[in-house]
Amino acid sequence: MIISRTPLRASFFGGGSDLSGYYKNCAGGYGAVLSSAINMYVYITVNKKFDDQIRVSYSKTEIVDHVDQIEHNIIREALKIAGIEKGIEIVYMGDIPLGSAGVGLGSSSALAVGVLHALFAYQGKAVSAEFLAQKACEIEIDRLGNPIGKQDQYAVAYGGFHRYRFNADETVFVDPVICRPEMKEALQSNLMFFYTNMTHISSHILAEQKENIPQKMRNLDRMVEMSCEAERLLQQNALDDFGALLDEAWKLKRELASGVSVPEIDEMYAAARKAGALGGKILGAGGGGFMMLYVPENARQSVREAMRRYREQTVSLEPEGSKIIYVR
Image (cartoon, rainbow, N blue to C red; front, side, top):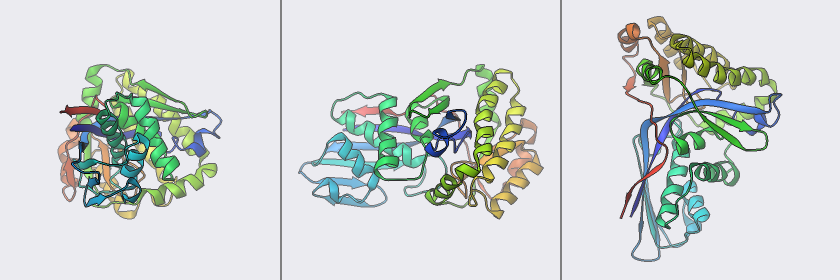
């Protein structure tokens, strides 16, 4: 039996520049995203099945005779990549409800990375974070044709707080964010997460965003610049400026596609700003899921009161990426 644990992620700056339509055509020659893994996880259990059938359990249970019969597309393609065709059980659990599409935390990519990690460990193979990220991208983008970028797969495979650079030749540079430990701890303390009570179908928003790239190059160029600028602000101990930069980034992100924000989200964000939040954003594609806010210590209680209609989620930054936590 093998159990893998893969973190979810929170993206701060540069989302959208990880789409190939941008990083293959922009003047700078690359996209860049600043993000961190967080302490919410996807767990995958893999075990040998007594017979030759395949059992897959998530919000439903599938028992099939052949890998091609599996309905769960990510798990099906992961099995094919690993070369496993029969005699296996896979169970998927997570810290967010199963089937919670559109919460903005990279859960589908965490599933892809986590399943791959567990399947290769089941075969006795140690694989790198780079390998897991590449193969997860192959599943979600190449095989399944989802209109998504590459940031989530890398963020959950590597873990930690990194700046990811997506190059036109499809290579990805992974650089840790260098700042004083106290700055990272203070940033973590000043982040608040609230569930909007809405989910979204990210593929719809991202498909429109993908089509809009030629008209939104200037927005995306600035968002890439912000990923560098934000890291410099952390190095300069200018934490509140980091929070204010999130506000500018959110305004740019809202213009990338029509579904990124809706009136309810705009009202929620305005209330948080009025209560003292310096900046924030909807995580993921937009349209729902979790709102991340940067809130100085003296404003946290007033923001919490303004957000009393919404569930607060306590989140911390996670230093580790996908890992195998149990082997028997």
